[in-house]
Every structure is written in C-alpha cells, then in structure tokens.
Length: 223
Image (cartoon, rainbow, N blue to C red; front, side, top):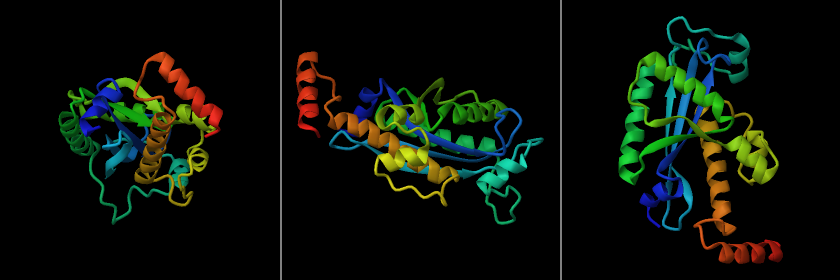
C-alpha cells in the first residue's frame, strides 16, 4: 500500500492532528498561544504513522484576553524575552502551505482535523482563521475526528494520558500541555487505534461474510 492510498482510507480526507494551547476557553476573546500539527501518512504495510510535526509559538492577537489560571496551568509565559513567537496569521499561512502541499502529494481533496476533544481545537483554529481573514482554508470547516470519543470506545478511557497508558504509549505528565507534545501523543494514539482496527481485520473492507468469519476467528482465539 502506497502513501497515496490514504485518500481511500478516509474518503478523500487527509487527517492532520492539531493541538492548541490557549490563554482561556473562549475562542473569540482568549489568546491562541501555541499550535502544532502532525501530518500523517500510510506506510507500505498500510499502517498509519506520523510523517511530520509542525510547531508554532504564537503572539497574542491585539486585545486578546489572558486568563492567569490558564497561563498557570500550561506554564506558558507569552511575554518571555526569549520566546520566538510569530503572529497567528503567519503561523496559519505556514501551516496551511504545508498541508496543501501534502494534500496534493497524496491525492486528498481536503484535510480533516484530528484532536483530543477536537471541538476545542477546531473552535480556536476557526476563530484564528476568521481573525486572519483567510479565505482558502484546507481543513473541513466543521467535521473532525475526536480521539477522546474514539479512545472511550476502544479503551474505555477519555483522558489523553489514561488513553495513552491503555494503548501502551509512553506519556509524561511533566511534558504535557505543550502543543507539540500533546499533538504527537494524540497522533500516536489515533494511529494506534486506526492500526489496531486494521490488525483486527476491520480494514480493508471485505465482503461481509468473510469479514464476519475473520472477526469471529480473532475473538474466539482470544487475541
């Protein structure tokens, strides 16, 4: 299976894992401070993996609200003198250029956001796009894959750290709450769940009778 076949796995969509770190919970008023994106590909065995991760430290937009409790929680100092941040419109432009290039490379028509509690990240991304007046958004405007929901189904866990533990993915609480770390752990979790479903015989799709026989054999074997 080639990288180009990722377009067949997700109905023409390219999954891109996004995590944002913010200065509060209100997407319209609170600052976007960090953003990271992991671009996924499919290897020759048909397994999903992280191809590349992009990271951006972002200047608070003019008039942005900064909640002290949120800053204390993430440990981010948006005014640190050595912080190499850029305006959010520049970060979006750079990220979207990479995503569009990947879309063209693998033959997908649009990106789809993957996130842990994806509505939060999607909301802040869309608010930043609106502020930057970006007209060509490569992401689907409202559809997403939520790893919290998927992990609840697969592992019975919805917290990222607990879901990673259940999936045997190393997770450091001391490194969490940076956009890059959380993005890559979310990406690892998403890849593992998709690949696990393939290992169980759920992909590629086969005739129902054959699929049912394969699944029954797997479950009866106890694997």
